[in-house]
Amino acid sequence: MRILAALVTGLLLRSVVGLTPTWWLAWVVPVPLLMLAYRSSQAETRYLVSLCALVGTSANFHYYRLVMPVSSAVFVVVVQALVWVFVVLATRRIVVRYRAWWTIVVYPVFWVAVDTIMAAILPDGNWGSLGYTQADELPLLQVTALLGVPGLLFLVTLVPSAIALALCYGRAVRNGWVGYSLTALLVAAAVSYGVVRLHSPGVGTDTKVGLVAIDDAIGLQATGEYAADILRQYDNHVASLAENGAQIVVLPEKMAVLTLAGSQAWQQHFGALAATHRIWLLAGIAVSDAAALRNVAWLFAPDGRQVASYEKQHLAPPERRQHYSAGSSFALFPIAGYPYGIAICKDMHFASLGRAYGVRHAAVMLVPAWDFDFLDEWLESRTTTTRGVENGYAVVRVGRESLLSVTDPYGRVIAERQSRSMPGVDLLATLRVSPPLATLYTQIGDLFGWLCVAGGAIILVIRRNRRAKI
Image (cartoon, rainbow, N blue to C red; front, top):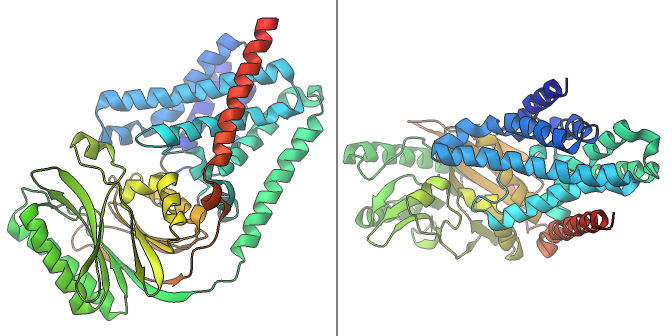
């Protein structure tokens, strides 16, 4: 019966850790998993949680297989399952031993600690964090303006921890009412804060932004006629957007992979295009020269000058295999009196980079992107949106094989559309641009996350010392 319960929970978990998660299941699915752990022996818990976690995390195996070798995809699924095993087993040992009100926070503390460490040390950061499951729930998402994703993740894991403890032990929990009241108070405070923040008066300057995406790829072996057809279609979209009032037009990541000579020709082309239509134009290109492959974004002013060039800092798995170089510099440029920042796709998965632009007072982030066959379009776009809420800036993200989206500093989707192959699509949106909103997260960064790392370490030490004395 317990094996069946673990399998069913694992199947439900797939809708939590998948690429398009069901937000409310993130608050529910851990409850039966924790209850299984509290009511089973340590040995039983180990295999039950392993079974549940493997069933759940395997939901993304097909996606991993697209971006990495099979062996690496298997490894990632197993490691993600082991993270669940560690968190649940570590929580069980404390809860079963003490059964006190404060043990309610053990599960969220461990999750936030692991998530924070992953964000800091892994090449893909905390991609797929449970915190991002709430990205469309705007009142909750505002918590990230205070404590970042660690704060939101703490809430998401605190509630099932409290429910599981109550259902398993009830009145046997010492001073349980304190923990349950604290949980209810924190959730109510978070939602209230979010509602109030979302009703803040909107001020700023209305700016028309245009987005264009064509999914067809232009590689180094592409024929001149093929590349010219795609480039001509981009020109048509840009012209149409400019005629309809677009002041800024953003094109996607890696529109083409070009030789150094080819990239120089495209630079001249885009400069002339910007000058012809009197617009700001951002274009993403990959350049292959004798030194390295580089993933860059060029910004052109309405007079045709190239005023900024940004090189992607955080590389996707295929780029790492292809030995792309990684940039280290930030790019901001004033447009109509507001500072605009530039990042490329995976860069915005990293809260540290998003915060670096917040510290530099970016009002809007322009983000060319290229996702994977539409599978991860929701997760990638909403992860980027979260960076904007954390640091108080708007985001214009243009993804190939993904979504074109414009979001405000509160995470509201102003406009959104799915990309497609030739002749491609465009999107025109009116974005109210204002000075960046001051957020606590921009000031303190992941301080809360690192406090949870310290708290988790203390809990593990206390448990070990206690066991040694017994």
